[in-house]
Amino acid sequence: MTEIRGVYTLWLRETKRYLRDRVRIFSSFFQPLLWLVIFGTGIRFSGTIGNLTYQEYIFLGIIGQTLLFTSMFMGISVIWDREFGFLKEILVAPISRFSIFLGKMLGDSTDALIQGTIVFALGTLLGIQLNLLIFLEVLPIMLLITFGLVSIGLTIASFIGSLESFGVIQSFINLPLFFLSGALFPIRGDIPVWLQIAPSFNPLTYGIDALRTVVLGNAWVPLHDLHYNLLVVGFFDVIMIIIGTWAFSRRK
Image 1 (cartoon, one colour):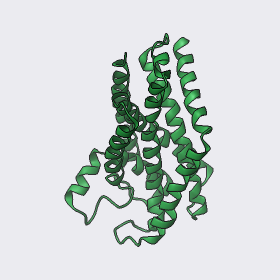
Image 2 (cartoon, rainbow, N blue to C red):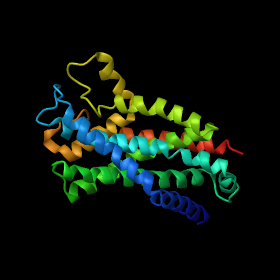
Image 3 (cartoon, helix red, strand yellow):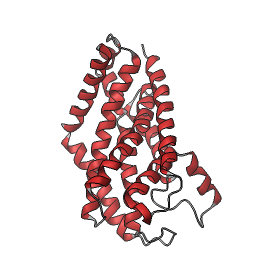
């Protein structure tokens, strides 16, 4: 019971802290909007995307980008907690390091999910056919994607001592994950071989492919079966949670 209460308390703290930061919510909403409106309409992509417009194609990629960037950025909370001494208070609490990591991971994943939901709602303004049923199907997939990505951010932050260093490492990981996920361009067809191979090692590739499979339906030819995509993302989540828990257990 103590472990569950500890997880819930950490989840509630992270969620409340995010919801109270109106500036961060607005800025995180504005950036994807620019990508969708300017980048999505300003580029006339000639690759093979079937009957989809480029804006329809990029829409789910930008949701993946939002989940990625928001999830990874949440790791900065570990550095802030360390600077203000709150992390020491958490670490001496009578709960396991796994529960501490799980509470922060679930709280940060909830924050990223809220941000992704806001961007998802933008699709209706852009003329993309969405409904409540599709949203309910997409919601657990988005949450599953955030678990592993948040765990990466928390793991990195547990080893990094400064905000500046965290920002550099975060960008170093974020950008390859984003650009090699098929979010902006198809990763099959007439492209270099290495651009077709590299995304297969990227967990975000499978997450975005799952989102497109659910939202676009028959208009999208998936890279893999939906269940296979979810299995890969789930396996990645488990591995990152194990690594993140180990990273937290090293802290004194």
